[in-house]
Structures are given as structure tokens and as C-alpha cells.
Image (cartoon, rainbow, N blue to C red; front, top):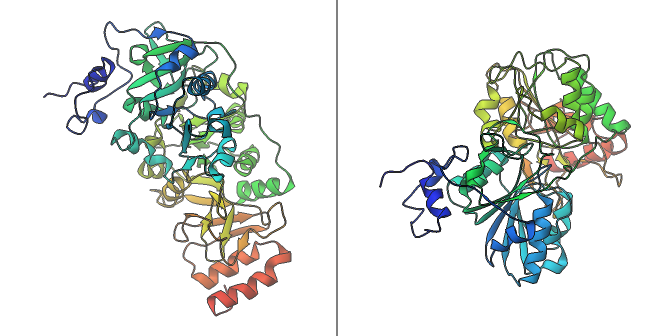
Amino acid sequence: MKIVPGLCRYIWRQGRRSISTSSFPCYYSYEPAFPIAGRQPKIASAQEAVSVIKSNDRVFVQGVAATPLPLTQAMAEYGNSAGLTNVEVIHILTDGKAEYASKEYEGIFRSNCLFIGENLREAVNDGRADFMPVFLSEIPLLFRRNILNIDVALVHVSPPDEHGFCSLGPSVDIARSAIQNAKYIIALSNPSMPRTFGDGLIHKSHVDVMVDIDYPLPELLPQQPDDVEKSIGKLIAENLVEDGATLQMGIGTIPNSVVSCLHQHKDLGVHTEMFSDGVVDLVERGCITNAKKNLRPGKLVSSFAMGSRHLFKFMNNNPSVEMRDISFVNKVDNISKNPKVTAINSCIEVDITGQVVSDSIGTRMYSGVGGQVDFIRGAALGYDGLGKPILALRSVTTEGETSIVPFIKQGAGVVTTRAHVHYIVTEYGLAYLFGKNLRQRAHALIKIAHPAHREWLEKEAFQRLKCMPSP
């Protein structure tokens, strides 16, 4: 049988699901941006739209600022009233209340988190939801290789334009690959959704049901960094970020603090999995021009965005901003093509050999693998040899415990290995670990630990390494 682009999905749409996907590799050919002639989405209420969900279905939910909250709320209510069981809800970081993950819906829904947000931590750590360790760059492979097949996708889009095209707005990330795999697409059409350029186009003819609604996108207002975070941000900005660098900023107040300290820099570029209001400020000040980039010069390249209405307004119909599939943005080879790649991420705990914990606090899951390793490698392997992979953390936790430790906590997960690590930064300084052996690493890390813990760390390092930490 000759494979026609989109045919497999079209057959699925007509309900002819008898064709085996294993012998019909539609994940190579399906493109959501081409129109299907003569096909229109059904217009329905959120309650009517989600009634297609059945027991044992796998439901994808678009994340971050594009979380389709009216649809997830309707799904929770329908699941309860219809007596559904064992519905898997798969997603990365989502915004707002996740009703389906609350105790009252146990047995009806079970979340499978590819990245854990604050609204799912309790459910994951109570055993009512699951967490899947996976690199952000590889999540699309789960869908495109049919490892995780999606029955229903809940997405949030801009209204169709005069040609029938909608946009996934500030959350293209894994959503594009999810709709490529999904058998049934329910789209929340919202005029408040910014229309973005890049990979986020979906033609309305691929949507099965469209729900029209007008409500403001959830905002993540910028938080003011405290004194420790300001110190870390200043250290990184003044010592590690050069003019003409290509920036990646992870999630958290420390990367945001670094951005706030770059007002004197010139010709910065952005190739990052996510960005927020601080980047918009640097663009408006002329600090970010993207002029020096080798990959997509002149373009701010990202995959998702979280921030205020000012951020969404900046993104809307802005051809200088490209929201791309996460498999493109976080591909190590793409990252490494740009000049002076400077990857700035935060972490939770580092042991004296350089093992980095970023997704958990002991056995308690906190976030996820995300794109940290993708960008750590991309920066380290930069074609120009000038990349800087940076991991930052406070020297002590909010409970006063040292964040630089002899051994990581029992049950904690190493996200970034000791072989990946280059720069570790606390408010007490910078430690460069690349090319250093274990006793040299211990010495460098103890120097940037909180002074109250340094003597103890030195003794513990001697016990572990059987020799004194030394430069």
C-alpha cells in the first residue's frame, strides 16, 4: 500500500481503525498543518466534547500556559458522572488545578507525568499518579514510534485564521508530536491565545471537536529574586556570560535572576526550551538581537513560554519568535551549532564528586529530567569550543542543610552525571569541574559551599576518598 501523507490519521478519523499501525508507519508521514479537503470540526461545548473519552483511554493534555483548563475540568466532571475507570492522563508541566489528580478521582483518572508541576507533586508522591523519567528531547519519540499511543488529545489553540489554520501558541514542545499521534483531537479555541510562528500550526480540518471560549491564559508573574539568588545571578552574568552568547535558561528563579543581570550585554541570542518575561525585557532593551546565531539567525527559538500577559502580547504574530518542536530545540547537534552556548540551569543537590540531583529530594519526586542534560551536552559540545554548561544552586536549603553533600540523599536521582558537569555555581563562587579528578572536584566544591559546612565536608570527603581534597 502506498503511504499518502496523513492517510493513516484520515482513516482513523473515519473510524476505520482496523489497519495495523505496526505495518502502516503513519508516524513518519502525518502532518497536522495541511488541510483535509471538505472536513470541518464539530462545534460543541466542553462537556459535550469530552464525552468521547472512554474507560482505559490515554488522554494527552497540552501543558504550561496553554493548559486547556475548561477541557480538563469538564473531563474530570464527565469521568465522575459517567463512571469511567482507568483513564490515563499524560502531560508535562501543566498550569492550574488538576482536578483529575485529586483523591476523589482515584480509580477514574491516573496521571502519567513526563514532568511534575506543583499541582501533581502530592499525587505522585502519594502513589496516585506516575512519573516517567525521560529526556524532554526524546518525549516526541514516544509518540512518533507508537510507544505511547494517544486516544484523545486536549489542546488549546488560537481561532482559525482566514485559511483555517490554528496555532498551538506558547506551548509547541511535545504537543505537536502528540497531535501527530492522537486518534481524536479536541481543541479549545481561544482568541486570547497568541498566534506564534514555527512548528505550532494545526489546520482546523484535523480537529474533531472545537470548543469556542474566550478567557485569559494562566499567568506566571515574575518573582523577585532574594539576596542569594541575586548573588548567584550576578556571579554568572559577570563571569560566564559573554557578549554574543547564545542563551538557554531553565525553569526557576535562579535562571531568571541571571537574565535580570544582563542589561549591559550585547548581541545575545536565544535558543532555549523555555523563556519568560525577562527575555522580553532584554529584547526590548536591545541586548538580545540573535544576530550572531548560526542556527536560525535573527530568530528567538524556543519551545514553550511561561509568563505574564505582556509576554503573550510580545509573542503574538511576532515573526522574530519561533516556537519549535522540542525534538528540534533540544537536539544536541542543533544546540551546539550556535556560538558561545551558555546553558543556565538550577539543581537541588550536588555531591563532592559532581553528581547532580535535579528532579527529587531524596525519595520525594519534585520535577523531572526535563531538558537539562540536552543543553548541558549541547553547550559542552559547542562547535566553537566556547560553550558553558552551568548548574546553579543555593549553598544551603531552606532548612539550613548543605546543598553540597558527601553523598546524595538515599532515593535521590542523578539527572546530570559527574561526567556531564562543567560549572557549578553557588552564592559563594564558581567551581569548574571539567578535567578535574575526584579530590580536585571535592576541593573546588567545598570552596563554594556555605562556610558553616566546609570543615565537616572536608572531613567527610577524606572519609569517602581516603585522601584530602586538594587542588
